[in-house]
Length: 236
Image (cartoon, rainbow, N blue to C red; front, side, top):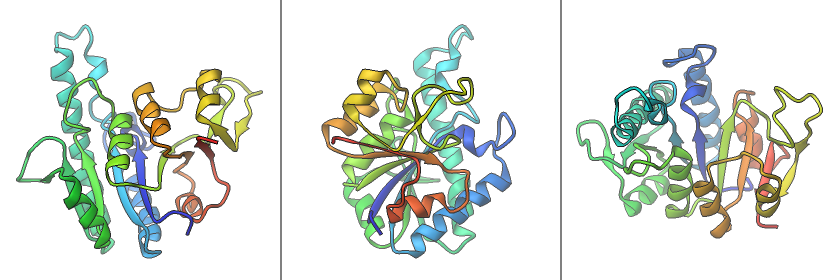
């Protein structure tokens, strides 16, 4: 295996499957199976999941809901998704821990770096919910920050697209996919990978990012093995 400890970033919208909102049971089961395969290989897995399938704080503009309040609502949505994923993983016999940037002891542990690392060392899948616990920061930023804190080898951004393209492949038929690209090239070409805060955190700490299609069975394990799946973004 090329990577020993990974941070898997999943979007909330991905959990909705073909639906626009909510949690799709088939997609949840698929993700649990993919993660189980990786854990069985002895890989330490941490996960950050978004909440866009339930609520997005940035969409509160003009609704009468304050932006800060909306962001906190979005954080709670990520905890709901984390609880769903936790239950699905445990149904496969995996040991898990759900840790939150906001204290809510009845459903999850507060995030403590040393405790998170210890869980990973014991083979538990650690799910980070509620972002970093502060408004105005996306779950992309939470993924980058948590990956740095737990000293992950790589950030794996699982999406419905199989990598980073020169343009949006859904609207531009001439768009081509990069197999490898540097942080500087992503900046200069204005490519949309993660929000700027998250992306800069990875760049400054030399933490590689791999963008890949999480919905294709077997892709997650292939990425962890070091096979050429998706797009690798690195310093070089």
